[in-house]
Amino acid sequence: MKAPSLPIGLIALVIDAAILFGCAPSAAPSVSGTPTSPAPVVRTVIISAGTVTSFPTPAPAATVPFPLEVSATTLKYKLIDQFGNIFFCDRDFFPVAHEVSAQEIAQRVAELQNSRDEYLTILMHLGLDGVSDLSAEQNRLIDAERKRLDAIRLDVTPQGFKFSLRTSEPGERGFVIEGLIARDGTTTVTKKQPTITTCPICLTGSTLIATPSGAIPVQDLRKGMLVWTSSRSGARMLAVIQETVQRPVPADVSLVHLVLEDGRELFVSAGHPSFDGRPIGEVRVGDMLDGARVVRADLEPFADGATYDILPSGETGAYWANGILLRSTLAH
Image (cartoon, rainbow, N blue to C red; front, side, top):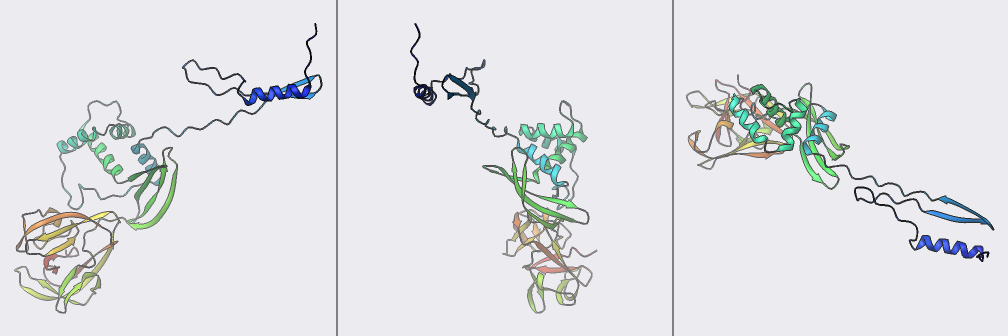
C-alpha cells in the first residue's frame, strides 16, 4: 500500500521544526571525553515538488584560545631582542666600584634558584641548561643576566604587561621606552624619548651653596661667581667658580638622603665625595661627617631629571652644600 504523501509546505515545516528544536544529531564525544566541535547542521530545502536537495550550512568559526601563560622572564628577553642594549646602573660598579667575591656571586645564584622559572629561563638563554656543576665564571654570567633583566620593569595588566626600560646607544645616549607587551610577545610602544645614559654623581638643583651673598641654589650658580671654600687645614676662604656642570640623569635613579644629628640635611648622589674623600654611598648611620654624627643615609627616588656641580678655585675644590662640606666631582 502506498504511503500517503504530505504536502510540500508541511514537509518544509517539519524539517524547520526539527532544526529549531534541536532534533539534529548531536556531536559525538571524543575519545578523551572532551566534546568535539558540533557537526555541521544540514538544512533540507524543497526545490520543487518531488525533488529534495540538501546542503550543509557553514560551520561556526573556531574560537582562538588566549595564548598560553608565558613567563615574565621570557617576555623580558623578547623586549631585549627587540630593543637591544638595556642600560642600568650596576650596583657592583655604582656608586662605588668594589670587588665581588666568587662566594658572594655563588650565593646570589643560589638565592635566584628560589625563582625557579627565572633561573631556568636564564640558564636556557645562556646555553647552560643541563649543567649541574656551575663554574665561578658561569655564576657571574648568570648574575649579570639577572641584573640586566631586573632593569626591565613589568606591571601586570588585563592584556599582559606594561613595560618600561632604558636603552643604551653610543655617546652616553639612549631612550626611555614604555609600552605594552602581550603574553604572545606582541609589543605596543606608547612612549619613546631620548635620555642620557649616565648614573648621577652630583647634587639636586635646589641644594644651597654657601656664598658671600648668602645661600644660592647650585642650579643658579655661574662661572666667575664667588663661593666659600675650605683649605686643607679647614680654613674658610673665598673662591671663584671655575666651572659648572648640569648632568641629565635617567628617571629611575636614587640619591642618598643624608641627615646629620645637628639637623643638616642633603640629597646627594652616592658617588659624590665628602671632604675627607669618602663617597657618600659609603657613609653609614653612626659615622662622623663634617663634625656631626650621621642619623640617616637612605636611598630615595630622584625625578628632577638633572644633577649639578661646581668647581671652586683653591687647593681642595670644596664647598658647603646645605651646610655640609663636600668636594667637587670636577676636582682632579
